[in-house]
Amino acid sequence: MNKNQEKIDSLFASSKKLEKSDIGIPLVQLPFNASLYRLDTLANIDAFIQKLKSKFPNKALIIDFWATWCAPCLADMPYSKSLHEKNTDLPIEYIYLCTNSNSNIDTWKNRIGNMKIPGTHIYVDDKIISRLKTAFSSEGGFPTYVVIDVNGKVNQKKITFMQTLDRDSMKKIVGL
Image 1 (cartoon, helix red, strand yellow):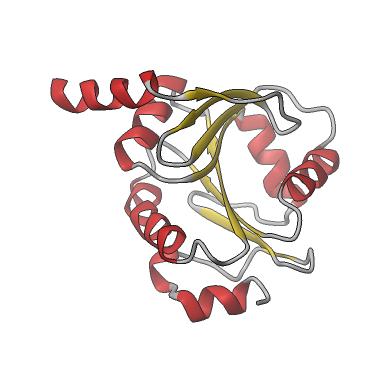
Image 2 (image 1 turned 90 degrees about the horizontal axis):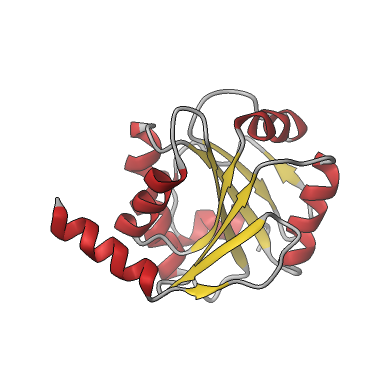
């Protein structure tokens, strides 16, 4: 257990500081291409969604709502990581929105560091998670996935689990 924590601590020690951002408080950029942010307050949900889209122009967005204590979430993450790594040539940004409900930021960081999942990770206040899910018409438990395809169309029913996807199905889902 201690060796694993030492590895995670080493990852964070070698991280880089992120520039200011409109999608949350920038925390760090980890060596495996993971950008970490924290989002504690949000005045306008629609403006936040627009900022996500504009931060990643000409890209489809796969948004993964998850929790550090959610076994199905954690079981599906390696598949998300594999899809990401095998399809880096596709214009897709993976965005992981983790609820702070029944968790803490250190547990969240440790999960990301342990799994080494690239992408944009945001530790989000649970009230904001609820508002985002409502805005996307994707109420329900965890994990929940929302796709914003390359044309900006939102679809909350295209992905149930990442493990069911391959390159061809991913391309179809994001409109490529």
